[in-house]
Length: 382
Image (cartoon, rainbow, N blue to C red):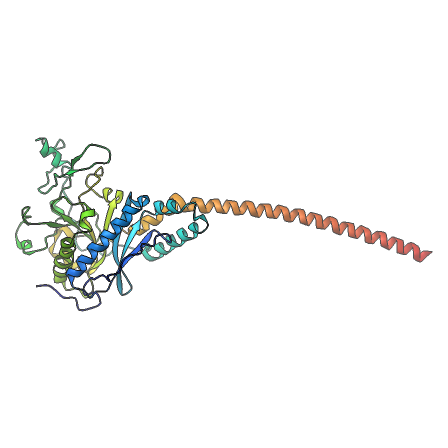
């Protein structure tokens, strides 16, 4: 039976406005707002629609196609969906046509993001359970099976893997090579009661995995090959995540607050960087769920894959700020500082010349006064 959240975080729902995609102020584009009231079926349809709007915007703006990200996160009493653009590509798209205001906008974006997401390093939350390490698996098991060969490194072979053909960045079309580490599986239904959790590859569509990094994240993967461009537009996918995972599975832990801090999905190079095979173009898609610490604490007791996963999730916005600041902003700001210093030096040189001229004028005036006084003294004596 579905657990109902009777507070302001009850249910995710999007207002049905069309996004304007105002992107010239900062590399984060507001797309839509959550009002927590709509039926989950409508929510899933709205998320699908907004995902399609984001993809259309990217398709219409080639400057941003290399890498981008969609996030749904809380903002005061509402949840908002944002399209995060590559900040360097954003900067380059506006330079030099808007150079006068670009540096101000970029600095404001960096400072605001850092203020919102940066927290000084503190001792980690007290660890109750030690993380369960994964075995070392064959990273190209699908290819090994294709060519009927054993793993050349003689490591463990995954039970769940993807052999779908996927376009590659720098080599011919090849197997996807996504696979599941058994130690990372997070059971989400009655099969958790079995001694060994079994995935039914014929009937199951999705799987939940923890990350190797000890962070509060769960990754939602399709068992069959689907890239994020397909997942983000899929109504059944969003409905399953919001109802089966968030509402029923997470809801069973009886938290007093909404159990998820953020939903995130990467595209392009940002997606490839997290893939098992980083050469893949249409990677095996997945959704990031950033979890509340209280939820992870409760999950640790029952799910080995979640033990020790208590560190803060990765804040991609901070990485975006660092990239923009180090690769573009600082050099332009330093160039402006050098230009200002040169101008100041020139002004100082001019002021020195003016002062010299003034001193010369004062000397001339003094000499004139001396001459005048001399004449007056002579006349007085006469």
